[in-house]
Image (cartoon, rainbow, N blue to C red; front, side, top):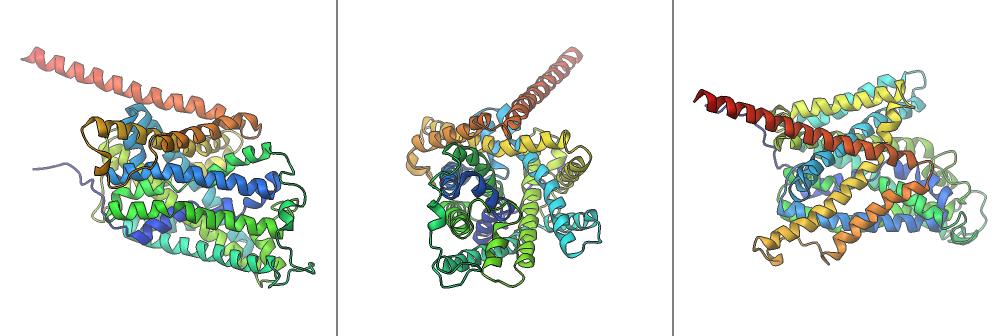
Length: 471
């Protein structure tokens, strides 16, 4: 009789789900709320340049991930690839960092969702709304991977429609088709350059680059979904090849519209630039509409975040790095224990943001902010080593269904650009602590992994000695 638990996931995600999940993971409060602050810091041209560089970096990383995830479509893929092609300690560290990134994000997203609801229901406590959204997101993930994918598809669709509407209406206002309050003639693109190309200096572009990379985190969700995607060799490349195009349209397009319509000195100081633009062109209920869109963006990010952190725990258990019970799935193919633990992590992050905001939560946020860039570096290095191993085993490049172009220049460029964005933190005093917290945390992950490995070796040695003495 086989007592081994059921640990298999189900391939239920289609191409449209994958496209929207990879898009939904990226478009969040960073674009809807923080983009104005970024324009204020780096100026219009500086911000556009920073986002353009960021989009290219992400695309390079996705091309590396494409080759790996098509050749080996596994859930929680990056840490499996890092384990196999860099080292088991790195694989374990990458998984913990990625799990922590999304778990910490969950805490802040549930708080943000509760605060938005307070604008419509000012007398209701924030925690009630946060708790309600926790139940909604948990249920979305618990029912089935198909249900999760479907809810994420519709959450992401609302965000995409809002951004397209913003770009279209904003472009019409720029050329003078739609009148703007207080402006007699079409603004065109004069706001972009009237105070010089880099009003706060070129250094501000590099400082902004750090936040831009974090804003683009979520594109790598394509890799997490690989083990639950129908026909990964066809659907994963399709999602990856449209990444750069989508990032340029949605991020650079909307930021160009914002910068053209709002003077950079006023952008993002008090409210969302989306609300400022919609109000200036006289769109009724602009504030309420954008609050609804931002709420959708937050719930979408929480939905994807809980999925990603759950699958990373499942993958750790599946690879034998944590107890196998966390990989056990129910009849609907959902790893419930991993889901409950990830949700508990999100609740603890939420509690720490209230109880220990200046200590525990600050450290968690600092580490999770840099974690995604380290994951990207691991993806690029895994691809470099995978290709070497593939060729050494007697295979040819032509056998690969998806090839990272311009190997090894492209993966090394992705790795170096990601490394630079980590190193550049040293020059920004506000973000410098992230590096100081991250380095010892990564060291601790390696110590835990190799300490645990040594302990298990000793146990095996003791057991084998006992067996031989009995014989």
